[in-house]
Length: 378
Image 1 (cartoon, rainbow, N blue to C red):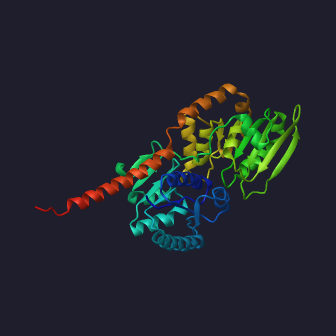
Image 2: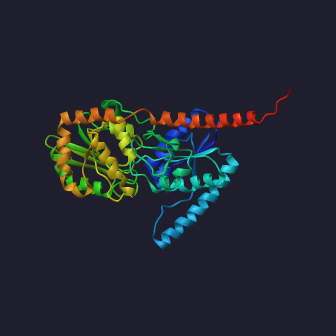
Image 3: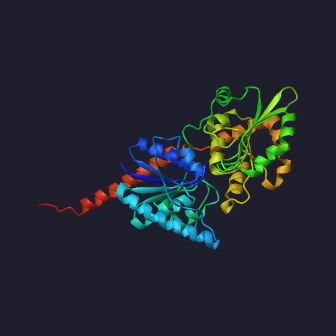
């Protein structure tokens, strides 16, 4: 049994896989604490999991701006000191970091204390945190075909995104009943990521009349920091068409299973959940994402024939893309079949087994070392 800290805050894309791993590891007998940020998105998602232990830790993103860098350095120092004290009191045996600024302090604290740490990079553009800390890791888990320079194969494992177990495709009827969506609606779901996406929210507002004219209703996740919330009803060709704007969704399985088409940012978490639920999608990479990772994520899915990609600078053409995909059932079928092939294995089960294997191997080496020096009686 190993006591684990899972550092996974900052965005839904970092926190959700941390929750998945914590649930699985606790079932295998490993007590877990999830280190999260103080952002609203972390607090909102963590409220759903009362059976897990969440710990808020100081931290802000890195910035070259002198004032912001000073704050980053201060928060990082506080986070490292807090983590080291916590590790000592809780008897922590390992730390698992899911990337982003919330992982930096706990992983550095583990490095200082000589505690094994594991890293997971979900995006095809490897983040600065992973690049900087991978060489000292016990394991670094990377997407298929992704490499980190000077990282030895012994430390690397190919592993996808560990989707939460409740994210499973359900029947459309059941999903739509849960959301209060009519069974005969043509439903377009808009996902801007856990922070929302102003350009996608604005696109919906600009194109509501056109969408209604095609009897396409909308369910848009606007993000908790955006002002749009409520329902707008517009006249369609034969009945009213609803445009729904909500800041957050607590049931992504139902939402994705309800959708005919999804328009989404191209974060690794969103893509993994879209893939799991087999939804035809149009991916809009966020153009300012760190390390250009969303463009790389979207391009990989497009190369597999599992998604359509539209650039943020080309949103004027998005309506035509949506209309084509919404009414082209052959194309939808092709995307769904390719999504079947895009999902490989069970990343969550693989992670849990590999962590256990690491500690079994470590324990075996310790026992062999002790027995090798044991005195013999003649």
